[in-house]
Image (tube, rainbow, N blue to C red; front, side, top):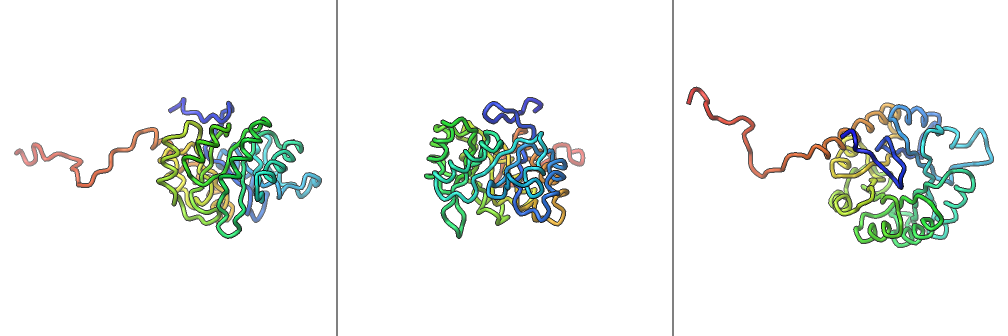
Length: 257
């Protein structure tokens, strides 16, 4: 398992726990959480970044050692997502981008069709594109074929903390896709993050469950351990599930029989 390295578009990623930066009551907790969880990939909504401010700039809380992945939260169509990604790169945020295109304000489900359009354009622009998407195999294949570096299916509607409600669909993606599958949105507890990893996910992105926890720093550490345990369990090959009981110790030789 020492050679079990996560590679995204040629870049080695040391931690399979990605961190979102929304909903923190105090942004100064963000670097503490990053350190506690050994986090490397950090996503930030471009709408929360004031590049003209030194005191109210979320970016200043993210260590330079991290991979910054701006996201296009708030984009309602591909055109808006592309514009936001290009602005982020022009402002020095790098080439990684998480595409979020959401036009539904009730359930906040991603629009796979518009997400695909944005993916096609931004890949041609040289971005490392990681689209947030509803877990549909055909859409995931089209995004991969368009050059996406990973796909990021939701586990449950964003911010709900309901857990891996899309498990069967995510499992199909993990089995069929030859690019990393990063479960994003809806994961509420470390045990659910471990479940994602046991399913075969390459990583998980957590925001609400950490940012709104009573102790975000301690919760980040718990998630990091759960992600590592889940990955080890997946690589170890879990035992088969049985419908009937099976003795762990045979009765041969019991009481000298």
